[in-house]
Image (cartoon, rainbow, N blue to C red; front, side, top):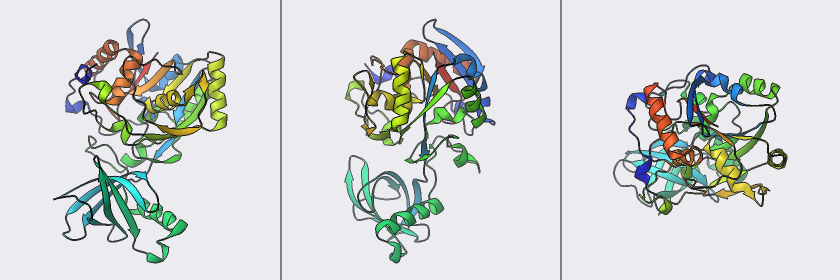
Length: 351
């Protein structure tokens, strides 16, 4: 299977630069896999397509201020660092960009010296950076970690996607779901952006249950596919976890053959990664599951998702669930109907 089979042309003006208000006023495209039909609704109507006894699965990952803008200690040249994953001690796996050469031994300064970093290693596009606080008395043990997080909150930025070029005062606040809780993600589970607390309460009142899982969204979700042959692409690992009471909810739904509605591709990958021998059997772990057409889904019946980038792992997962021809037809319909695309864009419900 070829990556070029999942390309489409999207004029730049369709890329949403800011979210709609209220959240549930976004457009909702309803795609019926069985009947091959497409309907146009508003997200607040989603309860019309969900039934009493359904189980909605949401990802509570919370985006943290993982982007650091700083300068090279020696030359003052600009550097842009994205924290990806915590390692032992004060080290993080990072993406690093900047003026001139980026090499091992480079020392960087952030926040007028509040935080410093030195590149110690490089492997396949990922740098290992050892960070130190300017306040040496706090530069060890648990105090270091607490103060590192505090400084990140002061000088770091939420890593909003680069295609969103018109950041506003509310961009970072809206680049979270209303149920975001588990800190550490470098990208948001954006299908959940459309839910308000009031909408969730209305769904509960209708008899729809909610199960919460966590997938800490990392490089694996948004890293571009660089191979034309899909089978050659390898996803980076991302951490997931499910609490026992949530596993019990999901397994009861599986046992009684009730409908499971996944909110977003990260919820799908978590459920599928934790499924074994007919049930959810893993509390936590790391997943590099790459879902593309031909994949057999074990856990979900319905998917809520956004409109994704061409040739992305997210689009491929959506096509695997909805069918390539139907989903690409739906995307062309979305362009004709002036839907808004990507993170701050509109939603799709695949039945």
